[in-house]
Structures are given as C-alpha cells and as structure tokens.
Image (cartoon, rainbow, N blue to C red; front, side, top):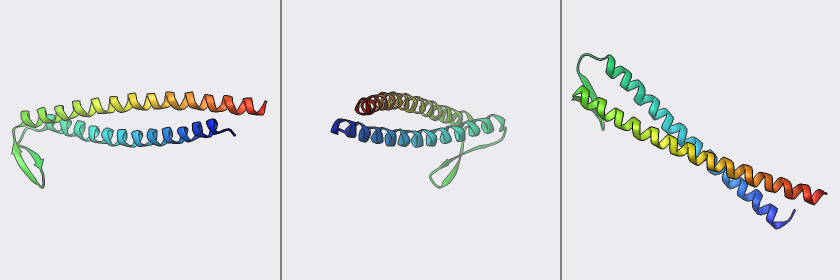
Length: 111
C-alpha cells in the first residue's frame, strides 16, 4: 500500500472518530431537549405554584417566566442539534469521498 493510501485511511479513522464524538454530543443535546419538552408539558398542565431549580434550591417562580426560560432553552438546543446534524452530514460526505478514493486506489493496485 502506498503512502498516500495509508494517509487517507488514517484520515478516515479521524473522520469516523469525529463523527462519533458529534453523535454523542448530539444525543446529549437531544436528551436535554426531551427533558425541556417534558417540563413544558407539565408546566402547561400545572395550575398551582411553579418552582424553578436554581443551583441546589427550588425557587417559587412565575409560570410565564419559567415557560419563557424553557422555550428559550429549547430554541437554543434545537439550533445546536441542527448544527450538529449539518456537521455530521459534512463528515459523512467527506468519509464517503475518502472511502471511494481509497477503494479506487486499492483496485488500481490490484489491477
């Protein structure tokens, strides 16, 4: 195997590691988003007092303020998830491109 092919294979490994890291981070944000969506659902159902956790204490808060805060956080997480998806797609394209180059080089070497 020539040096160029070896470098491309090494590059593929790096891309795949980066892709895995992105995937883990995206899953983390998706879990946070799910928590916020569940909290918003419960908030809508609540008719009584609403509490917000700040540090290690719960503080009585206005329902509309908590809802505004959660919706803001939800928007940010949505944007981050979309950003991760774009990055994932770019890495996947790059991985496919480099894989095709490596396969082509290996076939040429065999032939």
